[in-house]
Length: 333
Image (cartoon, rainbow, N blue to C red; front, top):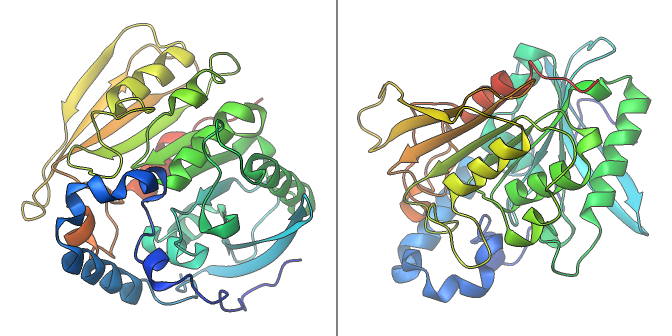
């Protein structure tokens, strides 16, 4: 079912503690040890401000677009999604599957990333599904609902029902959603033409399932001061540079990489950005945008009130527009 323009309010939010932890899914068992929790008052204050800024439970309007919502039943569970599309979209439009972090409702993810711009500027349909229990089953070594099957089935149905371009369908996510996007790219590579991850890396358990298969253009954004998904890695997870190197090998890149310091256009955000771009990647591209001094944040968001809790946000780049510009030149046959 799809309803244009009018979008029902999201269901009641999770309990206060869960709301206050919208992007910490990958490390819930280790939370008490994180330095970021040294000042709980600061943490909860920052997240309260984030939720106020994110516009409540509706997608903020973007000129030239309309919002929609629907449901999809998988394994007996009725799952919900929302989205943004251009008004009067022609057949054959590209698609972005955009996955939220832990406990952040899909409409708020749309607002955080300003996803409506992709519909307005590039004619894309942006789908934002909702995780069961607000947490994606991104780790293949753990039991949970079949999110791979749900997301795969949803996209297949929507491509057929709306005449969308199956060859130009991309997947992206933030934190828990970034890990989930990566799992989809590994386990359903035939459905996606590119992968983008913000504040996520590669799980050891997934790497062993992701050795072969087709190439997957990949772009990553990570902060060196991320205390939730550490840039240098942790038990069970690759470091961010090692994860980028993994994807470079998978994509057949054969000539090393070039590091480029990008212009520091905003001097007051406390960050700089370095682009690592792998060379000689046939019919592919692998890029890592390292935010020096950046935290567990989405680059370029207008809703940076939560950086008190999760670290600095860079405004030197805009992850939403950049990930699309990097991936959209690539299509599956």
